[in-house]
Image (cartoon, rainbow over all chains, first blue to last red; front, side, top):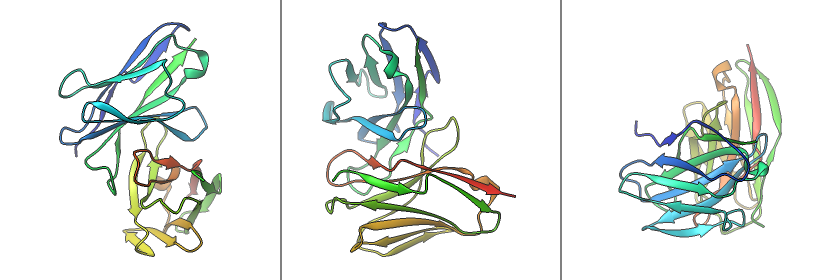
Length: 114
Length: 111
């Protein structure tokens, strides 16, 4: 079964540093997403990406965050100047269609900011 | 109006019993209601989903019941097994891009 692959599985970074979280969505999917889940809390939408541009973003997704699809397979989330409160599980997801389609999630990257 | 409220927060069910998790929403523009299952250290996995034009959808031991007038939907797990122990999330989506998630229910099936 096709998978969304995320690397690394765990990232520890110092406060103020930049991190890049990487994702390889399912190859025939057109819509890409980043979500995050702070420990013990609900899953929160960050951003969606379609046709090489951001299609929607939440209030969480401020200037500290950026996304990029640098080639035909990778989809990255960059977090600049990390803060302690950025510590969370970050999930990448992809879907084939916008409406009525299930998202396939990766296993996540656990980001720990110290 | 964008919220999805999920209950209970945690649930313990005996093996072989029925697990029931409930969700309620307010935004009538939502037209897609998935349930996700998440095991520790893993990403959410789509379990079953429903659209508001049907009142029930069944896949194996998993059933979604949907009440459009009450703006509620629920997940029923029949013959619950220890392997079903996980966190379950309901979600909702309209015509935009984001899924709105419930807070999650930690389900424990006792052998």
